[in-house]
Image (cartoon, rainbow over all chains, first blue to last red; front, side):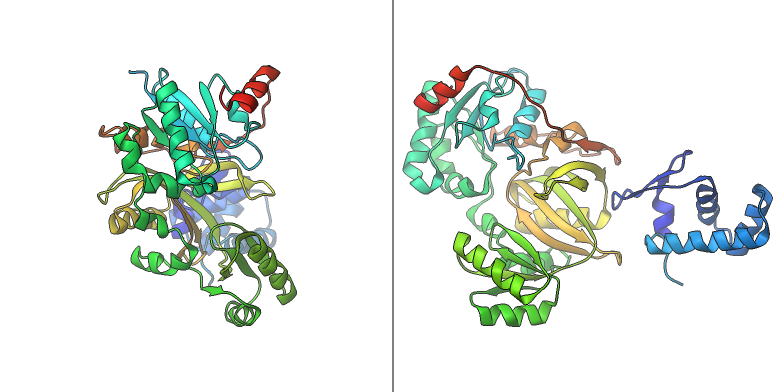
Length: 81
Length: 345
C-alpha cells in the first residue's frame, strides 16, 4: 500500500511513481478503485462502492475488482497476500 | 558577467553522444558571454560546426600519443585564443587531466577533477567495496583471465550473466558459448581481465552530481531513463527522487570526499534494494537534463574550478521530462577544410 500511496495521480487517471519513474494509465474504474484503496477501504467496502457508483452486477464487479488487484500486484504496486 | 573562456571535450554529438554539447549549452545558459572552446579528436565531430554554441574548436592529439603533446596543445590554445578553465568529459583523457591538473593550474587553466585515488574507484573490480561503504549492494562480480575462470564465475552467477570489460563494453549472455564469444571479443579489444557479473532484475536509475571534494556536493539530479536507443543511450527520461539512491549518493560524496562530476548507475529491485552497477567519474551525455530541471551542474562545476562558491540548492521538480531529438543544419565546407588542415576553426 505504501507504493500505491506515493503515486502522483491526476484526475485523468495518469499515475506517476516518483521513486522509480514508472507511469501508468488508469481507466475510470481503475482510478476509482485506487482512490478507495488509498483511502484505506477494505476490499468488501470497495466492491460495495463500485456497485453504488457503476451500473454493474455484483458478480462482474467482484471479478473485475480482483482482476484489477492482480494487475496491481503484478506491477508491484501492492504486496502479495 | 565576464568573458571567460572554457574548453569542453566530448563535442561528438552523434548517435552515441559525448557530454560536451550538453556542458556547452549549460555554460552558455549560465553566462551568455562565456566563450566555449571545443576540443575535438576528429574533424567530423558535429560540435566543431555548431558555431552558435561552440565559439572556437581545436583538434586534440589522442591521449595515447602522450601527455606532452596533449598539454602543449592546451598551452597553445591558451596562448593563441585564451583559456581560463577546462571541463574534460571523456574517460580516456581524464587520467592526463588529473595527472597534470596542477601544471595546468600553474598556467592559469582551472579544472575541478577527482583525485587519482578517486578516479580508481570507477574500476568495476571495486564496485563491491564501494557499494558496501555507501550502504548499498553490488551484483556478484568476478574478474577472470581464462576460460576456466570464466566457467567457474558463470557457475556462481548463473544465466543470464553480464560479461564486461574493465572500463568499456558490456554484454548480456544466455549460454556458455555466447559468454566465450564475448570474452574473446573484449580481450581482443580491451585486454584482460574480463568481468563476469550477476544480472540484477529491477529498474535502472541514474544520478548525476558534483562533489565539493570535502564531503558535500553542489547538487544532484536523480533520473529514470524511459526510452533508450539500441546502443543503450537515453532518448527520453524523467526526474525522480529515490530516497535510497539519493542517500547512497550522499554517502558516496561524504565517504570518498568526491571532487568533481560523477554519475552513479544503479538497479532498484522490486524489493526496494539498490545495487551499484557503475560509477562514472565525469558528466553523463544527458547532463543538460540537470540544467533544464533547474540545477546547472556544469556551471556549478565551472564556478568551483574558478574558486567561486557555487549554489548548493537542488530542489528540482519530480516528473520533468527529458527529450533528446535529432536535428540538422547546413554549413560551409570551408569549416571542414580549416579544421582538417589547420587543426582549428
